[in-house]
Image (cartoon, rainbow, N blue to C red; front, side):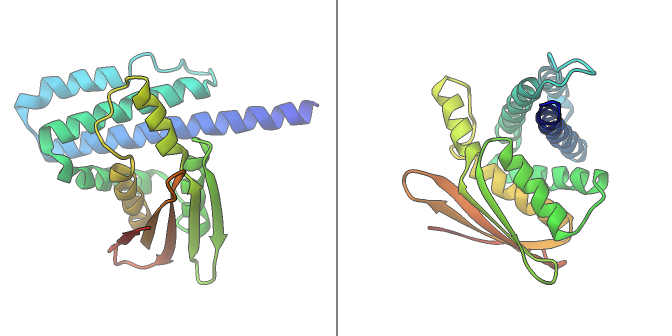
Length: 217
């Protein structure tokens, strides 16, 4: 029994750490973006947004998966609204590249297994249905048959939470593409929609060319 409890506790701890890390990467990326696009007229508002992002974060030493998830989602919504409201929807890609630079600079492994696993763990945090197949020559295919990110955001939207983007794919595909590219992988993705479930399929292969193609089925 104790081994089982230990495993559950470890899984909760790892999920909480990933929510925390993703908040760090997203906020650090936006700070980097703001520095590169400095606008004194927006400085006070940006500092106010930062204070809202980090309001009531879980205390040090406490494993609070739900707390870090809540803080991440709120922070993501605030940052999306700030970017789109002041810089325009097209600059989301630039923010995503800044986040990817932080991700690459602060994580050490660059093999396809590690890169695909990080993406899988992000999706698992939303209880997505995900499958990873590692191929030869450091390649990978990731299939998300049911995207929990989509479902989570739509439930939040239904509760009246302000959501800037019509679809999480508008941000997620940019961020995921940039993360893969920052680790040295060319990616292709296909959006999946059977009217009941949303998902996507990604393929990765080593390449310094970060061009990504997409399609929708």
